[in-house]
Each structure stands twice: as C-alpha cells, then as structure tokens.
Image (tube, rainbow, N blue to C red; front, top):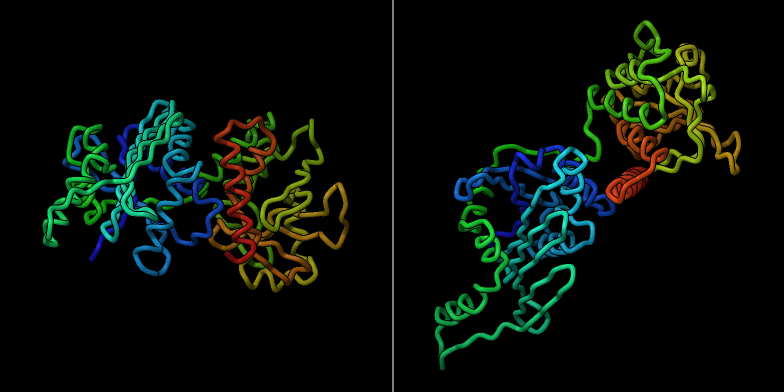
Length: 386
C-alpha cells in the first residue's frame, strides 16, 4: 500500500509536547478536522531528533484526499511548523529549528522544509498540472521548473522508473533534509511511522485541574489581581445533587473574587462560540441559590454544574439573551443553558474560555493573535456542531 504522511522533525529539548499540541491546534483552528491524530517517534538514524507525525483522522477517502489536506495545511501561512515554533517560543524555547516533510508514494510528492525564527527554506518535487515540477522557496525567492527526464529509446518500465528517480532525486525535499541533518531522513521517517512511541493530544489549552489553575493565574496576572483573593473557605457546594467538577474547584480556589478595583467583575462584549454578551462568574451564594432555580432539574439530570451568568451585550440585547454557562461532568465541556432546560454546546472548553479572557484583556503578540483567532474559530465550529 502506498504511504502518505506529514511529519515534523525536531530536537525534543527545544520542542516540548505542549508546543506540539498547541501549535497543531492553532494551525487547525480554521479547519473542520474533528479528530486529528499526532504521535511522536524517535529517529535512531538521525541522532538527537524525534518526529511528530500528523494525520487528519478523517474516514479514509483515498490517499489523494489526505495528501491534498496535508499539502494545503503545510503550505498555509499559519502552518503547523510555524505555529509550533510560536508555541515553543512562548514556552521558553525561542531559538528552535523545525524541519518538515510532506511525502507520498501515491504520486510523486516530496516536500521538505526548514523553519526557524528568521524564516524558512523549502525544496520540493511534485506532480503538477503539466507534469513533474520542482521548486525552491524562501521568504524572498520562489523558483519553479519543469523536471526533464532523459529516457532512452524504447525504454522499459523499469528504465523509465530509474530515469525518473535520477531526475527528481536532487530536487526531493527528503534529499534537502538529509543534507541538512547529515543522515538519510526518508528511511528513518518510514521506520518511525510504524513505531509510534506516544500520542500527543491536539489541544489549544490542556485539560485538567492543574491546567485550569494555571489559566486562572494567567488571567489574574493580566487583570493585575491576586490569586485566591476572597475565595470560599470551603469547597464549592453541590447544585441539585451535582457535585462541582474538580476543574471548577481548582478555578474557585485560584480566582480573585474580591478585586476592589472591579467589584462588578463583568466580562463584557464576549464573542466566542455561543458565549456572546456579558459574563459574570457565579458567587457561592448564587450557586446555593440555584437549588431554587426554576427548571434547573433538567440541567441537573444532565450532570451540568452552573458556573457563570451570561447576559446581553452592553451595546444591545436584553433579558431574552440571559443564560447560564454550565460545566459538564467531564470538567471540560461548557454548555449554554436557557430556562434551565435548553442546553447547547457553548463551543470553547473551560480552559479555552479562560485563555480567551486573558488574551482579550492583554496586549497581544502576533503569535497570541493567531491563538485567539484559533480559539474563536474552533469554538465557532463546535457550537455549530462541527
């Protein structure tokens, strides 16, 4: 069976798993890819390097469909290597270098890249509309030429394959990467493709109580607030028999509930997925009051836990837009509940909402602009059922 894959090649000391996870999630923010797969394998033939292999995870529709997706994704201005480099810089690795290869045996497609903060270099050979073509690209240069194949008269099929291989070999992306890394790259990548060591979840924000606490502390820093100020002395109460998820308990312990400079604690003009308008996190007395909230039994039956009140925008909108933002039993998925009965996916996860809030109230770098854009795009797709 013909092999098609896309891989990043990197030094693990420069590119932590969190950078891979966030970088791919940012690059995929505007793509309708519901279940992307990303796994890492060592490359014993290329000392000091690992490879991260990406696949869309969509139902097989033929190798060509997947190759089209991989080629378009890696040619995008905000490609996975670019977004991973940005995430690595944010995590304290600004000088990292990443290599990438998009390869297929289904057709001739061998596209190699080197990315670093100063720019990129690309070498490729592929099947174009008028035959085989090869190219070299940098930020300041783009060369594309037809590949000429010298065939003997009455060439056999094997002679034709050999002539084609000789003609394209100098132009191959894998040839470029082998020269860059000082080792045969294609064979090593083929080996790693069938020997995965670990899977990396593609996520904009990591899940779990520890991650939520980190996101709250990030938000507090942006708003110049104090961690845990005014936090309840006891754990959050159950609401209609539904215990608070561990992520909400982490949030309640770390959040600043009593900022004297902002007693209303309102987040206005939000627009992420179905969370639109003004949001205020529920206080302890409001949580206890939900025991008497009309119609909340249906939400409780779905194991939803209320965490915030959503009201109309300050620029318009009224009571009809009021709703409760609730947290699912998994401690990650958010729901917008209206009237206690009608629950719809909010779009962002709990951690993504907190990151969106911190980015919305801060001065953003180019990489952070890409991240907030991905947060909003991904939330929109989820809220629409994508």
